[in-house]
Length: 96
Image 1: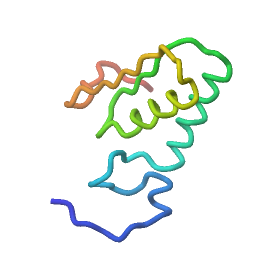
Image 2 (image 1 turned 90 degrees about the vertical axis):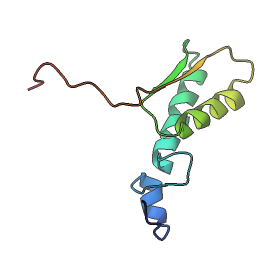
Image 3 (image 1 turned 45 degrees about the vertical axis):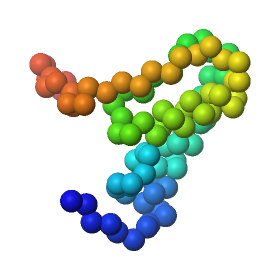
């Protein structure tokens, strides 16, 4: 059970809170980054699709799809949203 806490704007900006009723755990700074990266891809005419791997409720992907729709209305880019729903498998080698 999650206990609701008072809204903290600074924590929300940085994505350092738990938005148990929200669509994304992504903070404003990271959403700004998604916007900036997609804008750069479109402005520089980079080919390819969008993929998000590992998600919670898909809020970042929903945001990214909205950005693509607004900035590139006739786009044929696909959006892929993937999650294992079980976490990553354990690694098999040391990454020292």
